[in-house]
Length: 278
Ligand SMILES: NC(=O)c1ccc[n+]([C@@H]2O[C@H](COP(=O)([O-])OP(=O)(O)OC[C@H]3O[C@@H](n4cnc5c(N)ncnc54)[C@H](OP(=O)(O)O)[C@@H]3O)[C@@H](O)[C@H]2O)c1
Image (cartoon, rainbow, N blue to C red; front, side):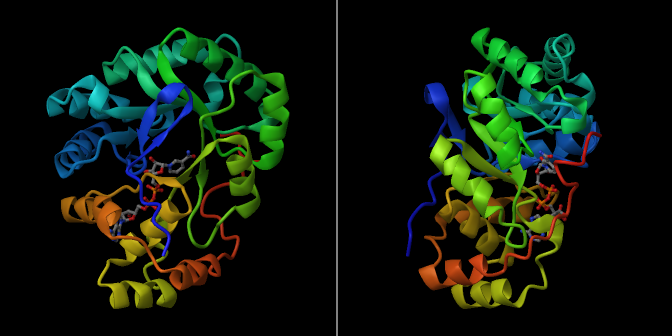
């Protein structure tokens, strides 16, 4: 049995990031304020939002209401495709900070490479400046494929701390994860539960029943044991707590990890990063 269910991972410059965070896609300002507040009460200390989710105001409200010291909450947001480019990125982050009612975020991600725009390198260079100025403690990318990273790295100076990608047992992105490991980039899984599409999987169900876990805990434990950070979303406080409690399940057996590795079927739920420019 591998024991890799660490509750935090260290990014560049010693920035510490919780391995399990709370996702907020599809939540409105109102539902995000409610759900993020419940997530904090359940023990989450990382929240993932984006300009594109149009809920940063609600997330900011939950942070303020929580009363948690700023340095105990890890906040990720992302620059949207239509804010890429030399002049638009800084105002985009400033607008996000205003909505979040914060003076800095912990991780600022370039949301999509959007290769058709041809702007991701110059956009990332602005992220480097924003990090130097303390408006974000760490920077990274999202939805980058190996060839996007191979274009980005020689043209920039700061290796992305994180690449947040679609990742679940049905889309395992092995080549990309191996490249992250080589480059020291933390893999963070979006849709780590496959947006609910894993519920009927007989392999996951059998492991869950045998181990006395929920199916979601089995999926999340698989991610964590592969060294992947996760940001599951739920509007149900009991599920929020159960998902976070994956940190306490003690790890999956190697044979079970292997059985889940064999579920890969290259099944994407979201758009392909080469094709999406939003
Ligand atoms: N960078 C990107 O391009 C990108 C793209 C998509 C998403 N994301 C981020 O990744 C986060 C997570 O992805 P996601 O929201 O697409 O999907 P997800 O977390 O894989 O799945 C969310 C769904 O799973 C259900 N669920 C959660 N916990 C459960 C449990 N224990 N048992 C059964 N069902 C459970 C939720 O329903 P209930 O609410 O009813 O529990 C919800 O319908 C997003 O919220 C967002 O922050 C990033």
